[in-house]
Length: 206
Picture 1 (tube, rainbow, N blue to C red):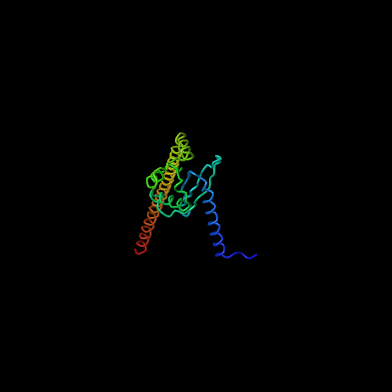
Picture 2: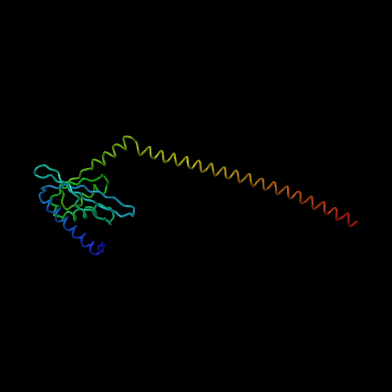
């Protein structure tokens, strides 16, 4: 087996991307109205990604959902830039004129982006999953408890550290006092020995 070269892999990936883009355009042509959900997240390398998922209901009332775009977003997460990027991606698929609603979280930049679309009839829908998460966390005081626990843990840790430092200082002080006492005893002995040797020297001289 001979592995394909890097250039061949890149060519095949580009062909697959082009094929699925054409297939997505054809699939969503039958949609009279389009709704999308979008969200951001950042990986460990601090690279930001934007995903746009399209939703529509056909004439038989069957729901269809498909990822329309999954792209990197290198700009700052400002409302005008987000609106421009979403509009550009939907125009490239020929779906922007069918867009009626956008479902996203309640972040300020996501809510404000609706004022920057060239079409003014696009409605904002707050994501139910995000809203339910906020309701549960606020009703159960999960965030407050977490903060208290963190503060308590921090306080206990600081108290333990301060106690350890005080104990270390006390031990150092005791050791220092012992050294001073030992030095004073040694100095006293040395002075006595010197006096005794001086007296012996005087006796011999006499």
